[in-house]
Length: 210
Picture (cartoon, rainbow, N blue to C red):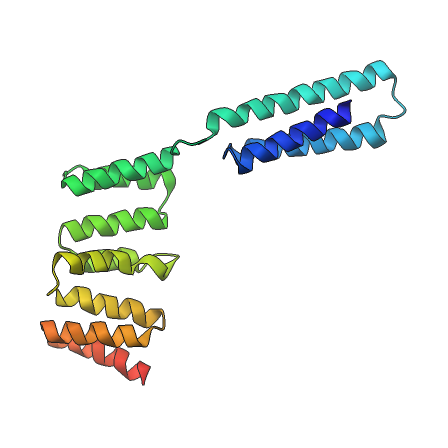
């Protein structure tokens, strides 16, 4: 009976973590507890009196049950996690042009750390203030560089004559090794009229593509 109960706890915790998106930490504790109890029951408790053995197993089962119940309050279920809720909230504040956006974003960074998504929100905030260099600075710190161009493409969508946005897009595609796209955006930057300093930067990139 105890083995069946342990297997049931393992099964429910795995379903909770994978299907219902319950807390992984508590789920792992359930699995560890159930696994240890199974080993104890099969190997170490054979020589103990039945009353003592049953007491240990029932106590362990109740501990597993407590861990399993603790999974549920932390589940995202089919709702958004607190992190995602905060992300959406800050994005709405930025889109409204609210002056509190930066302070709210700073608090979020303190709470969750500087994730790529938060860097993206900082980049988005910079773009809303027409600070393309600041936006690129945040995007340049992404651990996953594959989505940085999204924000710069958004900038070009707002102003298709922004030479610096085209230059930065060229730099992004250079880093990814997409040299055809890189040249295309550098050409657009030159066409829109960049400064002599930026022209020298483009020349530096072009030399390394040849």
